[in-house]
Image 1 (cartoon, rainbow, N blue to C red):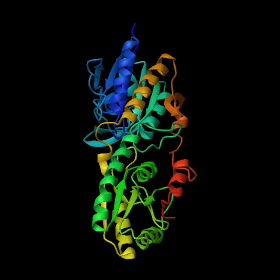
Image 2: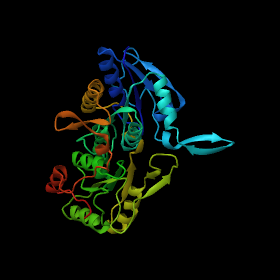
Image 3: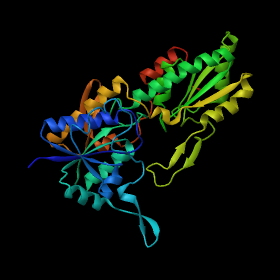
Length: 360
């Protein structure tokens, strides 16, 4: 009997999802394994929304952004919204997921996702499902892997925005603030800020002093630089304050939606520097578009490694990048806590060495 596996994409979208799906399907097909796609993350597993994936279905998707399977950052099967007696309640539908997968003959499930989706995968594994995780997030905040796919493409998008902001900032003698994603970690801000020639980077790992930020801008003015570029991670916060929460969306794995720190920094800063300050919020532009070459290669390596792990009989593992090698690590280790930037990280030290300021 031919082995059959399932694959789903969960959480926020990012460049490279289709590249992983393609690699999973092609690698599995060449090894005689059937692949069943599950639409819209774990929602499809609850609602029995399945599609058979073969070489034809994944032809021409390597360069495409998004995911052909759809995704969702809601629909946790352990707290699934259902309607009973005219009202909506949350219900544990995890047993239904296991039954639906078994009915399809799915023996192993490959979950492509971030910390929320992989935590769900871990819980399903503890109920007996064989699972392999693939680390996806533009935030690069998953433990046990050097890089998640999607991160480098998001950095490219932010860096390109900084290149464009430089010319208008210099022309008008303004301070330009670019607000980027990243949730509770500052990886995108750090890498994009260094690559894009920023002057100040504000990240969640280092609470900032607005006076120190003003000091950095004024010091540039004294040296004849009439403009400055600031990159602010959405989770950055002042020393005596909290992160700026845009809204809360109940039902999501993480209901907190961050956003607005750029406007806050601009408002607090403008009176201290005597320069006009403008804010650009990149938002979901960082999630969209084609993956860059690095992410296409990494995503393809992850997809084929996931199939290798299935064939080897591994379960409860995540494929991960360690140096230049793809390895498998325990899912529990990968989701134990968020990977934040160590203050002595080599890229952080490099940024400080070339004069970048962090508001501390």
